[in-house]
Length: 327
Image (cartoon, rainbow, N blue to C red; front, side, top):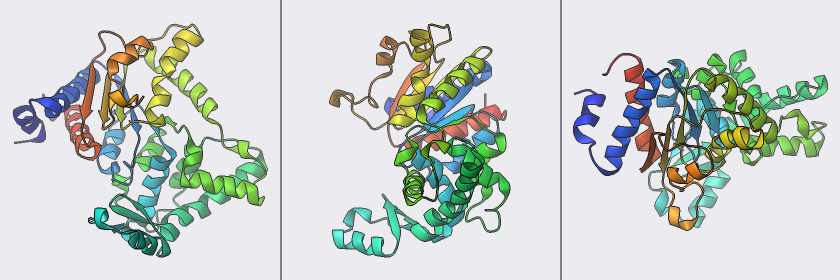
């Protein structure tokens, strides 16, 4: 039994049923010629989402990505240093002294995974600092991901990748020149390193990195151009700024610019947030109707589950469908 048939047979109720419905809704959108913007919150890159997302990007099913700075950089950290990562399956049992021991070893923990400081963060910092300096001297300004695209496409990291390049979603995005939107980049490790370089005097100015408001302007132009001929869906993994930022582009265009544009044509969120706590991330999709983001007829799904389980399943169902492997 293939995955599609397995889901159709077993995933029939509750969150499993919504997963099945959401996957079918994405397939329907794809069949209608629609695209999908995927957003990445949380620590999905450290959870190796690239194993399932990269093939989807290479297949042309993903039209754009909005992600936190952490998800952008952690996919590269994984690319160059995965063999030096340490998994800590008993992380719930760690004492504060155990955590200090990891700190002294230069291991930065993300739940059950420790990222090695010197082999990952500092290695990428070395390459990016060179690029930031060149841009600074040339008076160039670029978005955060453009520096990473340039690094990946240069081949400088190909000498000894720590994972199969096919599993690196940022590499797949760079090769496709995929539109990428990274709001709030400053709170990432590389963003912190950039600020430190400015303070040290290694770089002369902050604004060689293009700002979040410029990223929103870029998103506005891209959304208008894309939806002029094709419907576009919104697939949100987790919450936070990675999702809140791009979903606002529709009311910005319609209400602030007072220009016509389609609403999002599909909406799905994999969430662990609780609506009754006043969480933006946990808001049910119907609330987005009142903000002019979704319509009454927009297919809407919320899967309250673990994204590390749910996202790869949906991605594989859609990938197989797009490849002609499922009806």
